[in-house]
Structure formats: C-alpha cells, structure tokens
Length: 128
Image (cartoon, rainbow, N blue to C red; front, side, top):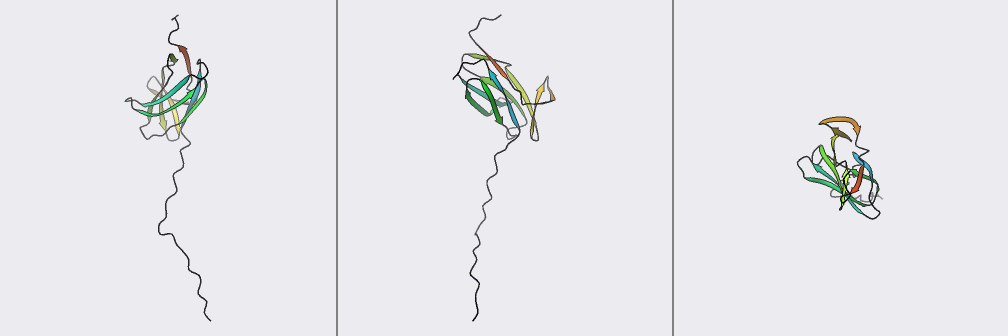
C-alpha cells in the first residue's frame, strides 16, 4: 500500500507587512505660560511655508513629534495659541538621517532639536 503525503497549501500571493511607523527623528520641547485647558498647536512647516505636520495639546507641558523627510529636510517649527504670543516665535531645524538639528543664523548646529521650548505670554499684556 502506497501512502500519499497530504497536500500542502501555498499562499497564492504574499502581502508585504506594513512598514513600521518611524521612531526618529524626534523633535520635542516644553510649553509654559498657558492657562490649563488652553488649546495649543505646534506647526512644522517647510521653508516655503507648507505645513508638513502639526501637533495639538491643551495647556503646558512636554510635546513631541516624530518627523520625516517626506516634505524635505529643513523645517520651521512654530507654536500658537489664541490670545497668546510665543517666545521664541520659531525654530528652524535640519534633518540628517535619524537626527534633527537646530539651525542658528543659517548654520546647522550640533544641537539636537530636543529642547524646542516655547514660553507664552498674553497678547493683551502691556509691553515693557
């Protein structure tokens, strides 16, 4: 008596697994000077002014964004909240592989973009 091995099945097609979400480069910082529950938006724009990504949160605290080079390697980071002005007004960053660096006076620094802090004051505050 001859035994036949059971049939084996092969998938007709193989679907590639989904690409994992990027983990770097990360830009991050702290927000201060806002009342609790005040809406804040961090904008990441190309140098030409096109928004690449944004992050919203309420109130003060830590913020973090994973950014890619999908829209380029140079970006301007701003923070806004209605009725408030941020200091500084913006940061410029440059992406290099998996690291984002701060740009100052048109020059790429060795400082990673991990301390992009924004201090807010009321736009109705009297100037000093």
